[in-house]
Amino acid sequence: MKNKEKIAANVVTYNRKDLLRECLNSLLAQTRKPDSIIIVDNNSTDGTKEMVEKEFLKNPIFDYVRLNENTGSAGGQYTGIKRAYEKGFDWVWCMDDDVVAKKTALEELIKLKDVIYKADKKKVGFICSRVISEHGKEMNVPTIDKKAVFGEYPVWGKFLEIGAIKVSQATFVSIMFSKDAIKDLGLPLKKMFIWGDDTEYTLRISKKYHCYLCGKSLVIHKRKLEKPLSIFAENDINRLKNFYFSYRNSLYISKKYDQWPQVLFNYFRVFFHMIKIISKPGVNKTIKMKMIYRGAKDSITQNLEN
Image (cartoon, rainbow, N blue to C red; front, side, top):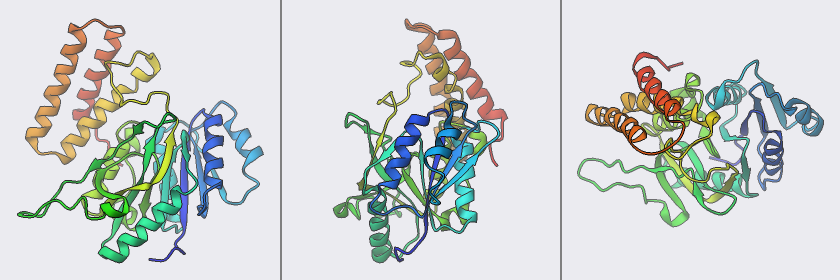
C-alpha cells in the first residue's frame, strides 16, 4: 500500500463556528495534508456558512456541504463518508468540529497503516487516534479487541511495540476508515442521530476487519465535559435530552450484536438506572426518567437501519 492513496478528511459541524475554524486550521497545518477536506454543515444558524465562505472556500482543498436540516453526528458522518467514497477516496478521516489535530496526526495514521499492511497482509477497517482533553486527560478511549481464535490467546498486542493496539470500537473523534470497509459494510446509521452511531459503525467494521488505535497519532477533543457521559451527573436540560438517543441507541446496538443474556442484562441495568434516579437526591428527575423510558421503549419498537 503506497502513500499515494487519496485521503479525505470529513468534519461535521453544527453551530460551533469558532471551534470549526480551529479544527480546519489544524487540518491545514498537517505534515501530510488530506487531499480534500469535506465540511458537512448540519444547517448551522450561527454564521458558520459565512465564516467558511470567507475564510476557507477560496482554497480548493475544501468541499463544503450544507444540509437542509440538522441530521446530527450520524447524518453528518453518513453524508461525508458517502461523498468521499463516491469521489473515489481510499480513506476517510472523520471527526467532529471540536477536534484539534496535532500536526503529525494524519501522518502517523498513514505510517501505521503501511506498517500493518506490510507485516500482516490483512485488510484494515479503521485506525483511530489517541484522544486527550485540553488538560491532557485521556478521552474517547476505544475498546480493546480481545477476540481470540479458539484455543489461542488474544492478539490485541501484536503491534504494541510500534504503538498500536487492536480495538473493536471507537468514536468519531479522529478515525480513518478504509474504502474496502465502506464498500463492504456500508455507512453509519443516520437514524441514530447522535451518541452511539460511532459505536455501532465501528463494531460493524471490526467484526470483519482488523482495526487499530494509533498511539502516536494525537488529537485534542475540546469538549467541555472531560469525563464519560453520565445521566446521573448531567443537569443541563439541552444535553439531558440527548440521553434519549444514548439509551435507545446503546440498547439497539446490544440487540444487534450481543448474545441474549447480555441483552437482558442491559435492559435490567436500564431499569436500575431509573430506580437510582428515583431513590437518590437530585434535580431534573422527571426529564431523566422520561429520556430513559422513551429510549428503552424505542430501542424495541424502532428500526434504525438505513
